[in-house]
Image (cartoon, rainbow, N blue to C red):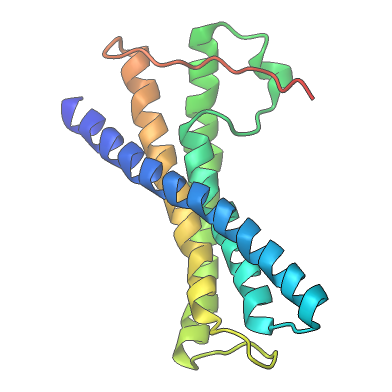
Length: 179
């Protein structure tokens, strides 16, 4: 079990780093958005590349932020079942849901989105907008984001199995959102 827990720790560290980058991207996206709006209203000037850069940063935040959110146990749950289970039952539900739903869905979506990226890369696809950005890098984010989420799923499965066998303890508590 030690090698698997080491793998889980490595995946967690990777997603922590990705999460840090996503946190920085939030600030950058806000600055680009505010700067773009100020320039547009103050100088009556706009740039499609800056608008697309905002879209790219948001797409990266969503696709890579999902694995970071999952690692932090802050993702959406079907709490109608989850809240009525014991801690061990919650661990089992997490394990089954991750193994049979999350990981297969992520791998399928990554597989299906890969040709979308490859085709864009092969033709060096550019934005249809004047002054727009290259499209293939952002299309790579789709399969990569799903792979990252699947990897975090593998890490969570390892941790849940280790917890069920008594090798480790995990905080499986879920706090219902107050909004």
